[in-house]
Image (cartoon, rainbow, N blue to C red; front, side, top):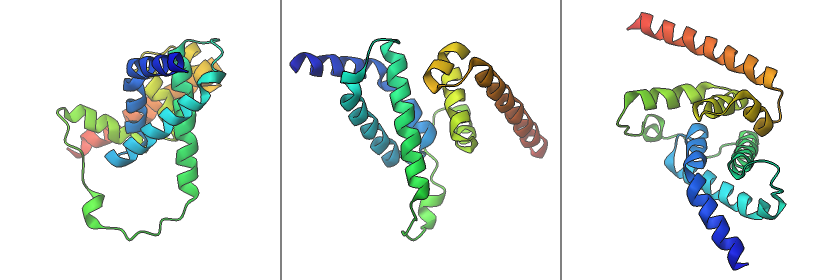
Length: 164
């Protein structure tokens, strides 16, 4: 059991960046990001014994993380929000050193969940074949979706620049 804990701690420290990136892509609020991160870590711990080594550990971590996030987002969409809306919570952008990162996060938030996952994988340097293994889609479908998202984003940025 001790070896399992040590192994888990090591792989988590090596791959925590991608998990945090995923959480930031799906949640804008820092507390929600922390909750999602904890949910992912718990799911990874529970699933560690099921890892068969058929893919790289990083690929497996990404897939479990993404599936956990997608399930969490789906579950939250079905819940009815009963808290009153407060104006102070509406426009509290996080302070970023680079405006491009903030713009990227805003753009990612506007995408469909699966397109968001594809863009994040693309930005992380994954190839279409690797993305297809992680997402359970064909490489052709990945390529098509990625090209559509690129076209959609180009159009949005063109319109944005016309208003400046």
